[in-house]
Length: 145
Ligand SMILES: [Zn+2]
Image 1 (cartoon, protein in one colour):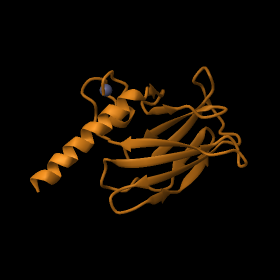
Image 2 (cartoon, protein in one colour):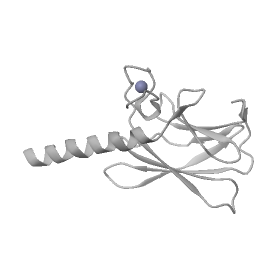
Image 3 (cartoon, protein in one colour):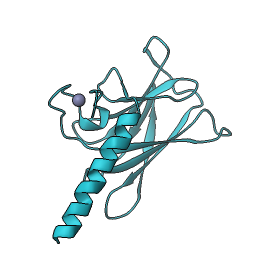
């Protein structure tokens, strides 16, 4: 048991190191801004644990998703769970709440249009609030986190 928890700790440390290399940008809602084409998308989890994806132009004004598509797959310990989305005037919102058991990995797959190659974003869904920037950990922008 001791070895197992040590390995887990090491694994968690490694995850931190690899996270550090990426630079996260905060979205207007306090979520994470994803570099999608042609418009940027913000991944945000509401207080009800629903996922909201909002598209923005260069001035960070919400815009219509147009032809941009999004797929979200939650990966809790129990197995992969696709999250069904509904189109909104400025993006997508999940029809259901995120599965329990976070932190876990969430894959956000985006496409510029139905024929474009998909781009995957891996988000470590940690909904705890960061003590420094007061954002949720999955959207934390602090240096060295
Ligand atoms: Zn932070």
